[in-house]
Length: 106
Image (cartoon, rainbow, N blue to C red; front, side, top):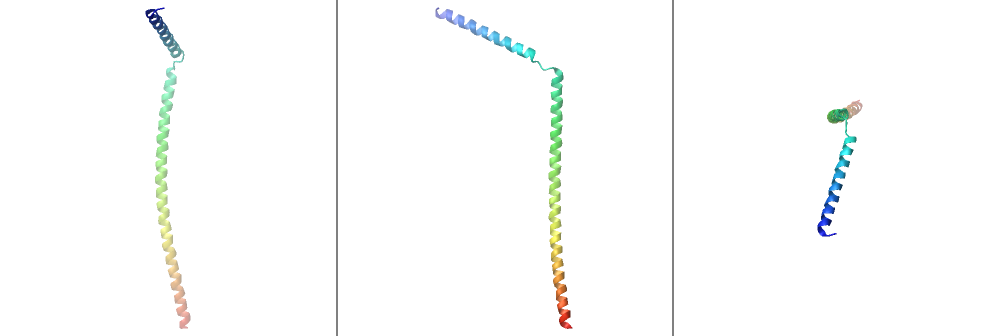
């Protein structure tokens, strides 16, 4: 077998292999074809998933805002409590001073 015959035989073998591969690919796609109803169902599910993700994001945003509001309200309430306790402490000290002044004057 000379060089020219070898090249021709190799070319024929490669062409046959290409044809077999193409035919196998065609068969696979022929039998595995996705029906249109399945594609529509997948698109519907993708749309529902997108809507669910948007709803989740809105809920997360609302909860973060609500948490910030409640944290702010708690801080204000704690500040008011501290101010009230200081006022009560001062009032008790003043009442005790007045008692001592009244008992000393008697």
